[in-house]
Length: 60
Image (cartoon, rainbow, N blue to C red; front, side):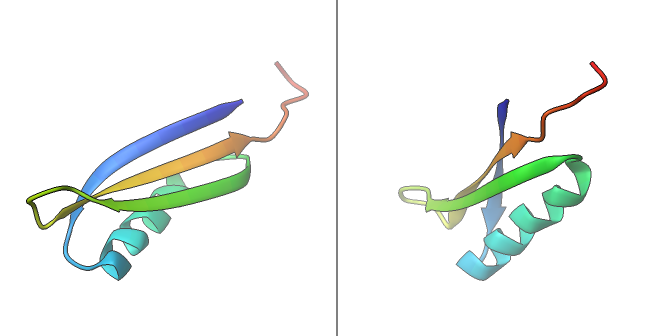
């Protein structure tokens, strides 16, 4: 199952990426993660998308 978290970040691309990485501690049992940093037009903000695939759960 794929899930997505989006947050806004200010500052450099490196800062935005670090913010995305900090969300990984809140996500359990992921097997693949993509972090996309996209600038917002006419703004210093960037959208950070954390897209992850959950591991299959055997105890549903």
